[in-house]
Image 1 (cartoon, rainbow, N blue to C red):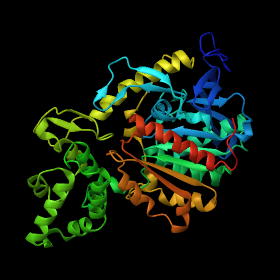
Image 2: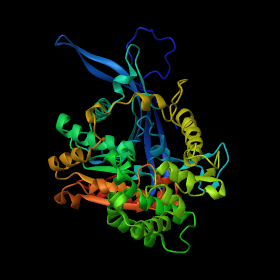
Image 3: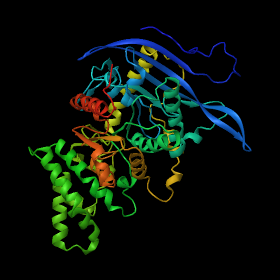
Image 4: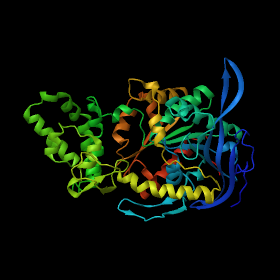
Length: 495
């Protein structure tokens, strides 16, 4: 590896009044994959985000407003314009992109073990022969206030903490990178996870309508396009029904369905959630005693909860309570991000779990591995606190565009697909994802017009929200993504 900084990697000796500048470190790497050796270049650090400075209608130039952390990987022997490029980020809002970076897509990955067999600290970092870099160049983006991304002196972070502001800032980073690297004629993809899928749907519309940057495909991992599917408040029975298959999958994993095949259990839960369950919930106190008893029995059987609990919950299982209730008799809670994980309950009489055992298990390995990787292997030197997930962003986040309604971007995705007849969408779902359950996401997709369906593809995995934590899923998902990018690049992806 060799350092080739495109700007001084340290601010020492620089005039404090000097305007912010890009600080990127270039390094050369090799990686052995099943198809041969990859020689690639990383470029990692921060780039300056500019905004038009208008005062009283007078343009005063481009004003620096933030320094955004990125890491780009490009193959050394590839024709730039002929090779696809994929821009990737996670969600939150407030999450950095380290999860997709070291979990699935990048050339290096964290080694942490899996549910029931976690490795101890300090964990590990290994090559990722299945990296998507073999098929497409990669650019990872940490939105403002996540990772090492910060506003510049005099700017307010909250100006970037909102649905539209976030899309605009990420779009500008993408536009700038594409322009500087002469990639306007490259096939382009966006990969987002969780809230990153919400961002991706809005971003696709924005890039195409505002910047004329048409995309080849969207990769939506653990998608949420309609927040109403996860709203259990104010009599929203839709969420109770749509979460049922996730509850059934979790109960199956933890032994509540004996030796029945998972797909058999899920098929039963999906059918009940789509047909009988919504009717049962809509009837309220109009149910007969026999109808209510039958519903209690069916819901208890599917979810692994006791009939007494289901009856006392008025047939409505709220997800936070489910995590604490399913294995209460064992003194355990199950994970929200990944229900395969369990942890000791802080209290056996608590209404719900006090912390997510799956996030407890995942955060340490990723945080340690990425910060080592960033400083030692990518050469980025910074004393800034690396914000894995910024709670401040979540508290500040504005959804003013959706005032008095649930956040909903299905229409934006539909518009982007109508505008661009070649835009394809890859959906990845984890059966054990309790943050954005797969059946909720499928209900979102059902709102798209039938003529768009041929450009959608769906992949289901026996894993959680971060699908790739489960290693067999990671390997299969990597192959699925490479196939998707290759098929929708408009030409064969070349190395």
